[in-house]
Length: 289
Image (tube, rainbow, N blue to C red; front, side, top):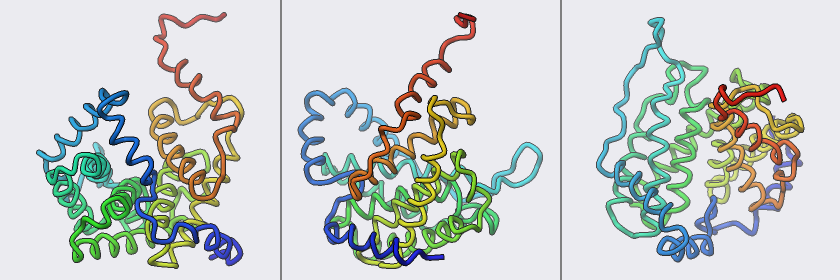
């Protein structure tokens, strides 16, 4: 159910951002800083970024297929689609900085694959409502925001319509029609809600109904962040901890940029790097002291 008061307040808070592009994790000043630093302090990191992007330029997005688990049952999450989503941000950033057309063309090719997949999750309850969808909402949201003026009109419409259709599915999940809705310590919730948050911020000034996406996803993520203990630990273990906090940080950076909200001072965040360091110490180095 839409919280009318929250949505009204969000509309007011977002008013200064109407028509501003890029705005998702990027703005004109950040863009200029990146372009300047890739030849200096960030040259090594930029070399790695371009190497990854070049692999996607030469590669092809996964063909839609059904995947089966070891027990012979279909993989309902279709997690292989996450690879399609992961390619696009690397390609978009490379295009923004270098203006090498290869990167934009490749970003559009990989994004087109996402738009054309018949499902983002192979069953009704997962289609558009879990990890595969979140990664592709992020990808299409950044492409639509960062490369707005560079996309062909017909393709831009396709991307926007896909964001609307798939974002609506994720919103329905976040309103209760998915298993992770009340699992505030689980990475599926964090990732999925962050994908919805991004999609809403990409479209809010063109499609007003998406402000409700921002409200619902943000409300859930705020409750998740308030559920963390002070020690920085995660019951999900090293792998899912690393996966989940990447998306939480994306949310927190955008919440800070758009709404002035600061979640980085929470004791869990101050201590969680120590949790990660302890987990990577080889067991031969463990001590009871």
